[in-house]
Length: 632
Image (cartoon, rainbow, N blue to C red; front, side):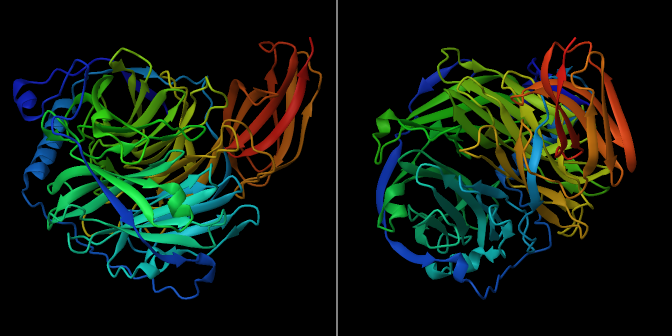
């Protein structure tokens, strides 16, 4: 598949579109929110303990409405539908942006451990997230379960419903929208979800592991989902941590309205981590009234960490998620202290070099489509004073769902920052997330995990490498789809709402992802994968193996030969790296037939030295990693 990156020119919009969907601010503005940002302190009492190792019975209650909701005619829903219609008509046939081919000097990620995630339990969408500890404990969550894996023991423990895990809280309603994060400083996990869909039933359920082992005790807390007692309820959580605190952002919605039409405001919960890990009453501060030009900021994404936890300042990002076309990005910064001075909270408007667009829904086997929701920011991290983020967007040339990637330099006085649209001529992308994959302070390499689909390709998942300066690898397939997704009645199917991505803090360049693919039974299944830019040692992919291989001659002067035997037909990639695992050359992609095969290449372009020939399968898993020497 040929990869493309869209760069550059802004779209010219007619006056009608400008009036309906204003692109706010083409100049940089740094200002306090127009309305005074509010704050309120809470002391949240511990409410129970959960011990996954002791779970013996799990009722796992799930209620799924299989009918797609009818449009309710609300203002925001109408704006969203008009935005899609206008974008479809504007970008369906006219080329507004130029393309440049992806830079193949950027290596695709290499896959290590990868396996089936939480069993599907009849909830949509998946809402995947994943966290992995320095001691190789993995916690994966979906709607509506968690599953724990011990990589040291090569053991996957049975999935536990969120209903059972949070049972000590006595919350009777449906548990949904789970999130999980690992704290490398404390060597602990934090897991949360929402409960209830009205102001009288809405709560945030949150758990802090008491030990590094997620199968042992967790301290449980309940945070009200209606903190202002104003008939609003909590939806769509996101979470990040600093050295001292956990930050949770949520949207407050009106009763009996959809997330599109019922939005009122986004709020931030700031929690003292040390209280929670000790099972003590939890000191917290609630911040609200984040707005710009008298318009509430929506879907604030808390920025996560790069290679280590940061302190001093916490950052959040937001955008105009329903805009037909916009270059506006909001950067919110606040002091990383409990009960922070609200006059020190800053809301800045930045300008992206390339506009983002409301995404179209993505095609799967006709007439079915997969929902992309909107262009909200889905994931972000900060490393060495740069914030990288990703979201859904539209490829305005092909009129397909694509991925948006921005890189903000916090030290730059220039309000404009580089942004790129990652697209593909064969598939459509959805629900990306991003994690740091560099190996030193000046290395801004990242891995983007992403779902993809096409009319003739079952929903699958993959990953792309970026160097943060506009270069991208080809797409690595992590898990191919086995069938299309069909859970709800009708053609319109859920695909998101988000994916999981986390750096492995004690392994340079290693990232873990939790993504979605279509199962044989037409359900959205979860696949979990470990990725790196350097070959993994001791990892064998169960789908293809190579044995009886030999690389010769070594030292070589002109030609290297590699003879190997494969057990079954396999699509192979041949590349050269140096002894430190750094990419040298991508040589060849070809299908190998069962039995004995011989591969050769000319070494004229290689200088004298020591190298490694790496052969990977179509999933990026290394099958051969063999050193050789060039001596001319």
